[in-house]
Image 1: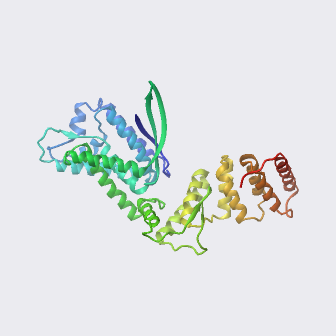
Image 2: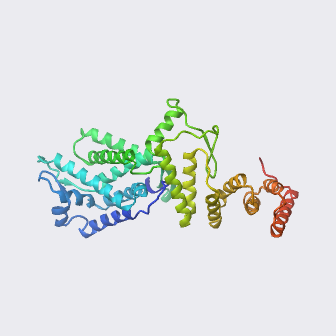
Length: 399
């Protein structure tokens, strides 16, 4: 049975150009050096032990792989953890972080092996840097999930299945396995030990970026996740309770706004700015995701009328019916004046997508006749006729 990760639900605010570039560079290094068997590859690119300090090798060794399986396995995980980290940093900062982890790890490794006279000639591979990315993903996005596809053969027929695992469990599994493997050889230099070195370096980088505010994790970093668990266990004061809905979160606390820190205020401003930029670019699904995060941070979701109107219109243009319905409900609740068009659209969705004629009738009954244009009155009569036909046919929704 084989499991292969292929995607993640972590929000990607930058396209993975850096990750794709690194994968291409690793593939090129492998095939241009005849599978890393050429004399140039060994003399110039592998990290060698007991021959002094060679800074060029600290960089190039991260692109060398011993065999196609070694290369492919590393590239799969570089893709997954690269998506998560680059998705928050952008290509340039991501490449800087990745190469810094690889260089620092190779430097520490070669310094530690200066007086080595054993049989192991050296090392290579991207896995040290990839374990660093995994640690960063653990700190920045522990609850996001990685999607896997599994393969198994039964009666000589290949079957597939899919499942999702949170980043934190994937990272803890690999770190735990390498801790066990390294302990068996008393933490002598080897694959497991070098993986752990990369994980430690990456953890330091991830924590530094988080504490300095150089990365925006939108409240989903490991610190906030851990605080949430402590609150649930009664060790910390509970935060304001919110109820999740399809369009966001509704505050269940009192009407007084929660106290917020300067960092929280800046995070909210950043999210609102991002949402409006996404609306301007026509990225309406991404804007919906940002709006949900903003709603959670604010406790009570209160987008301005124009922002909510643009988000609804964009989702309707993409035929995203399910998330649009609660947004229309909210719009009518908060802005009932001059909302006939929104009322009619919500009625149509109730009838066509939800089969809820009772809810459509309630909406039409509450819509005031005064102020409707002749076209709107005609539209209302057509909807009322459809509602009567469905109700007379015996269609009633539950609840």
